[in-house]
Structures are given as C-alpha cells and as structure tokens.
Picture 1 (cartoon, rainbow, N blue to C red):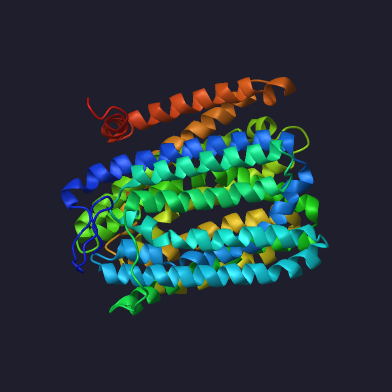
Picture 2 (cartoon, helix red, strand yellow; picture 1 turned 135 degrees about the vertical axis):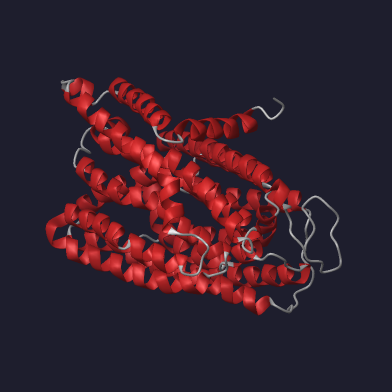
Amino acid sequence: MPPPPGQNRRTSSETGEPVSRSDLKEQSVTGGLASLSGQAFIFVLRFGALLVLARLLQPEDFGLMAMAVVVTSFLTLFRDLGLSDATIQRSDISDAQVNTLFWVNVAVGLLATLICAVSAPGLAWFYDDPRLVGVVLGLSGGLLVSAVRVQPQALLKRHMLFRTIVRVEVASHVVAVAAAVAAALLGAGYWSLVIQYLTMEAAATAGTFWVVRWSPSRPAWSEGAGDLLRFGGDLTGFHLVNYAARNADDILIGRVLGAQALGFYSNAYKLLLAPIRLIRRPVSNVVIPALSRLQDDGEAFRQYVRSALSRLVFISMPIITFTFADADRVVAVLLGPGWEPVVPIYRILAIAALAQSFNVVTGWSYTALGETRRWFRWGVVYSAFITFSFVAGIPWGVHGVAAAYAAATWVILLPGFQYCFAASPLTLMDVWRSIWRPLTASTLSAAAVILGSQTVGGAAWDESLLGLAVNASVFAISYIGVLWFLPGGPSFLKHTFRLVTSYAFPDR
C-alpha cells in the first residue's frame, strides 16, 4: 500500500489499513467539519466571483461558457472512471496497483481530451457560433490535467486527510478566481472564464502532488488491477445512467415546453439543490473511506452509518422543509421580481429532495462494500422509472413533470432500500432511527412557519429579507425546541454540539 502522504515512498507493496479504527471517529468528525467549512468558503468565494465577473463580462460570455460545458461535463464522467473510489474502498491495495490505476486515469483523460477537441467544430456548428471552437479546445486541456490528480487525491481521501484536501481546494479556487478577475479587467472577455477553469485545475493538480508526496513509476500492469477496473467500470456505468435520468427532464421540458418553462424549472432545481449538495458531497467524501475500513465489521458499519446519516439529515432536512414553507420569500429574495412561477415548482421539487436527503445512504453502502455491479443494475431500473415519470408528467406542463418526479422518487424509495440492504448489514430500521427526530422536528417547524406567515400580511413583508430572516429564526428555535423534547433528543443535540465544538476548539 502506498505510504501515508508526506512520508517517504516505500518500494514494497505492503498492505494494511491507512487509518486505524481507534482514530476513525476523530478523523471522521474533523474531516467532515473541515470539508463542510471548506465547501462553504468555496461556495461564498465562487458566488462573490460571479458577482464581480457579472459586472466585468457580458451575459453572452457566460452563455458561451455554458454551451461549451455541455461537452466537458459529460466527458468528466469518464475522467475518473470510478477508480478513485476503487482506491479508497479496498481494505488493502498495493503501490503497484495504485500506479496502474494512475496510468489508466491518464490514458482515459487523454482520450477525453481528444474527444472534446474533436467535438469543438461540431458544437460550434450546432450553436452557430465559431467562437466555441477555441473555447472547447481550451477547456479540453483541463480534462487531462484533472485526470492526472485522480489517484493522488484518492490517496489523501483513503488516509482521511481531509483538512489537507480542503486547503488545496480552497487555495486553487482563490488562485483561479484571482486569475479570472485579472483577465477580465485586462479585457479578456469570455476567455476569463476559460482561464478560471484551467487555472483551478492546474493549481489543484499541482497542490495535490505537492502535499501527497507520491509519484508514479513507469506504466505497468499489476496483479489485481482487473478487479479494481471492474469496480470502477460498474460505478461509472451507474453515474452514466443516473446522469441521463437527471438531464432527461431538462431535455424534455426544453423540447416540448420551450426555453422559458425550462428556465423556471432549472432555476428552481438549482436553487433547491445548491445548499443540499454543499452539505451532502463533503459528508459522503468522509463517510465512504470510513465505511470502507469497517466493511468486515457489520455492527460497527451499522453504527457508523446511523451516526453519520443522523447528522447529515440534522442539517439538510431543516433546509429543505424551511425553504418549502417560506418558498415565496426565498425566491423573491434570491431571484428577485419576475421569478414568481418558480415558487410552486420549487415546493414540488422539495418533496423529492426530502427523500433524497437520506436516500444517499444506499450510495454509501454500495460503494463501501464494493457492490458497484449491484448499484449499476439498480441504476438502470431507477433511471428508466424516473425518465418514464417525466414523460408521464409532461402533458400537465412543467408542474406535471415536477409532480411526477416527486411521486416517482417516493414510490421507488422503499424498493431501492430493500434491494440495497439485501447485500448490506444495514436495515430499514437503521434508516428510520437515523432520520425520525430531524424529520419530525423539521415538519412541525415548517408548519409553525406556514401558520405564522398567514398571520402577517403585506406584499412588502412577503418579499423582504427581514421577513425571511424572522421566519428562519422562528424555524430554528422551533426546530431545536422540538428536538429537545423528543425522546433521546437532548442527548442527540448535546452529542452533535460536542462534535462541532471539538473541531472548532480542539484544545478545549
């Protein structure tokens, strides 16, 4: 196994666990909170950069970038090939195997770069904009650069060095934003956005190699690499069918209902999922390596999942239910006038998001236990079912698509759990015990906000930031209060508070 980053590289192919189980809890807590705080900082940084660049560039500059990203986003699915998770998931892995996976990632990244470059003229023809040729060619280089860091970054995750990962990510985003703003001030126009992307990828790759202190040897095939590739191939297969399902609604709405309907739907979707992904992604990055170390201990696996899932929904469920209850103000404050049709769409999609807030546990289980072939098979069924729901809902317009999606998400939830848990130590009761307190407290608090809002009238209040802040405060007080009076609530809140303070004040 490759040595912990920062140590001298071993020449032997030793095996073992990168993180001892005695340190697993501490690493999970500090890593999870570090990832959350880092992602929050990056979110604020990127939002601030958007505000600045929006004043330096033209709207068509952003539109041009969005057109080009259609190609790069799809090819990014193949860049990793699921091999970073393969490195993280294995209980033991040799240096030779990591080296093989590194060169496979580089080869796939090179192929993706070539495909992206070749597609540039076709995309420019499709959109009738010759500027896209240069933009796509420029972006294509980032695919190869990012593929080079897949395995070094996987080693950092395997050893649960999440603070190190966060530092690299934050630094690369700061450098990229600075480069983009400087380029825009110098009159680079849409090339500023290309420069931002390439700078971020280059800085992240250089920073990752700097901290991991790992370097590949010459390309060679290692024993056991085939199993790792099969693991990654199944994972990639799932992501592909899931990607198709997640984009089928946009394609269908745009084709049948037009650009305006798609604009309302896509912005409702993005507005809802942005904060959820901000929480879910870093938590999953921490949970999967930890569960991979526990895959041979069913009881410890279950206990860890219950603890991690309860803390995840403790944050995500109140966000979903509060924004559902106060959607009018959320949309008015964040999007401004003219976006009122987003409100009912947002509320319908929030119903689906509530299920997705805890359905993430199946992905944890499939990946940590190496059941990616099973996940891929379920992904085919799930994607077909969700896509069918979009088709069934389209006769009723954009609200019909959203409602059909929400209904389908809940209908397929239980079969999805049952299929996953048939090859996992987890049970439905583990999920219920993890979510029932936040679910109860969130639902009752949302009801309190809705009832309270009905007692206050006035359009100015309805659209004000003050009204949103007051309702958020009412919701937060109600949420904590309900949790406190639920059975086991005080100990749950105290333990969660200790986890946060142990990270914020490690010397106390």
